[in-house]
Length: 253
Ligand code: UDP
Image 1 (cartoon, rainbow, N blue to C red):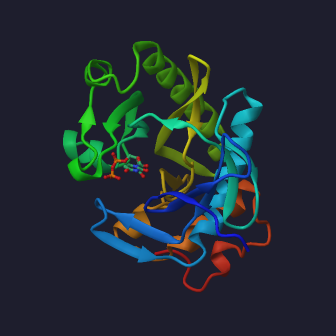
Image 2 (cartoon, rainbow, N blue to C red):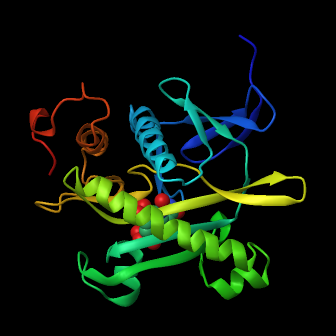
Image 3 (tube, rainbow, N blue to C red):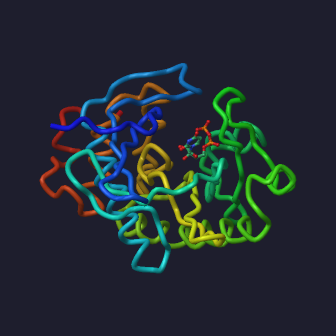
């Protein structure tokens, strides 16, 4: 087989040159990292599940008019995507206090926030992805003011839609991280949703017992990481052949 040109390798994904100009192939690895790469492990099958969950979510987002980089899933670990110029910002949307906001503001984990809150972080591993304000984003031209408004509006719309989608599966969407990219058409550009949406980039809790079904299982050494990701897929109706969580010996702790 002709070897493909690797364009970029990240912590959990690899991007290869696509079959046509303007396309890329996004490959989902089994690698899991946390705490800015200080914690690393390989979780067999994680990439396969995230590929399917992200496909499912992006496809649903298309039905409500959100444009994304997703074109189609190619196989177990790969999807064809549109090549976009990534905006160097991580957009986090929160509904419930957890993780860094709970720590920073001294909020009890699990407390519902007064309203959904959108935060921005500068994508820079060396600096540990520092939190930034809208002022920083426009002053340093990481995104224009209209782009910022659009990212904010798209993020809140995605939050509303995903909150409902997950609620229907008995899952509370606590928070999540999005990345956006620009697609150029001569001198005009438009923003599309890029990267992935999966239990690696969301906090997902069981509505009944607050069991964590996301990457916090890895970050906090709770075990059963891929089992939890499979459970999310199963509840969403993806991978119907996945075993029920209760059928996995010991379930989740
Ligand atoms: N997140 C992510 N990538 C990052 C940082 C955060 O996907 O580099 C996600 C994380 O999984 C959670 C949300 O963004 O769903 C908010 O994360 P938080 O700021 O609480 O940071 P963390 O607790 O991960 O340090």
